[in-house]
Amino acid sequence: MIHFESACNGLAGDHATRFAGQQLIPCPFLPPLRSGLDYRHLRIHRAGEGSGLIAAALEYAQALWMAGSPARSILALTRALYAAPPHTENAPYPVPYAALAWICRTHGGSGAGFLGNPRISFQHQAQRMRREPLERRRARAWAAWYLAAQALPKLPDDDRAKTELPSCGKIAEALQANSSMAEAVLWFEVAARQVQAS
Image (tube, rainbow, N blue to C red):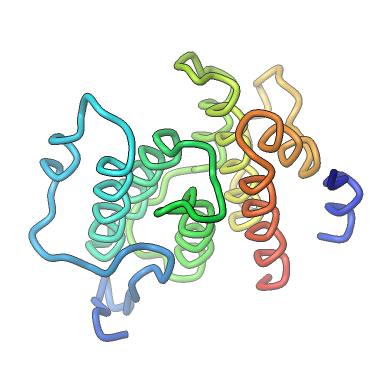
């Protein structure tokens, strides 16, 4: 068993487009940009979950990012985040922690488009989660909150909320308990890379 809490203590293009004078590059953790995608790309998977929805959400997230809509891109990533089954080493699509972290960090330096406050968004999702599998989704919401907080330290959390914000180690343990060890490791590696990039 990995002791994530102690490990966390050590953590202290061709398709480029322009947005408001800034050059956007595609997210390297999402599928290549496809033209002509809109909301209908996700609607065909409305009732389902699984690999079809996940692939569509990841493709649409890339299209939204490149269109200068980072907040909507994160919403599409959230669809994939909650639809994904427990992560395994040979999963066709990894849980999109790296894409989420990259978009938050890259937007923080580019100012391209409206981002909103992903920290508060994921904090509220974690605190108000109702849909099954509840504990896996809640753990993923906290994992996404943590990555957004790392990438966007100037944005606040909702300090009116009465829930204690979890530590890196607690999040990793919740992912391990409610999804898989492979997912906890995947998320921890993304969090560690964020610290190195800052």
